[in-house]
Length: 333
Image 1 (cartoon, rainbow, N blue to C red):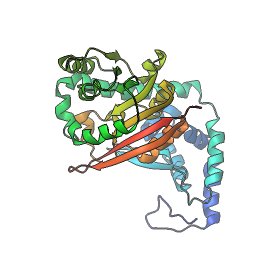
Image 2 (cartoon, rainbow, N blue to C red):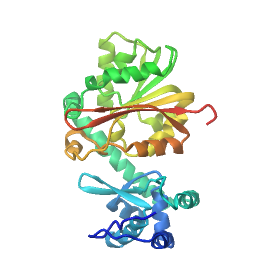
Image 3 (spheres, helix red, strand yellow):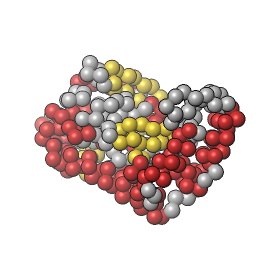
């Protein structure tokens, strides 16, 4: 495999020996191994990693450059911030099997209590940013969401996907982040056991108003997140996230929760934005993430025993792309 230096101003070709040496160099440092461990499922900004590792930004940037040159981490711009994650292992990587084996060993390493607490605090801060937005803008949610995409733009495709899942009316269905309750109202005639889960009291009240106005009294509404649902031992045959995952502080942890909430053979359905560079959605719509790569969703699903199923991609006139993804929980997980 021949690669090109990531941090060089001019394209520079390296030999296979150079590439292998870069990998070994990147792994020959305890701090860099720790960075790779922290990026096992999550992506972090540079300043967030500085907090977790208690290290200066200049020193961290040096280590990240070495990891990037070895193609062990990759970057993604989220507005004005650069987020780091583990690089996906491509099929044409000559060292794919070696890196995969190394990742297995790294992932077995424990994260210190101090670092774990700092990561938890970062996730709490992310969640609070999103929650504050919805608490301030509950009455304007439909208007702001419409700046990106309206439910009507993909509703027909979404219902086609739901109908294709083969669920009967006794299936237990959970919608996370139901917003103003549009999908709950559409699903209420189809399922006898339907629950809406939201961590914003104001948004949950709007869902309740929509459901009651439509004349349905069998829809349960819970205040909390998927972690709360897990503690309540909620069990589901279908979990739906409709344009919600980009508001969640730790999507990887959400996949973990969903895997535990799903009954054997249950399904996770995600309607989400593909990656984009429209940073204005952070302030206008309360988004924490600028969409998601297909590989990100696949990796998180695979990590927690969920298998990729049907998918659909819709290109919108304003340049955004919607991805509708289904993940299945096997009977043996």
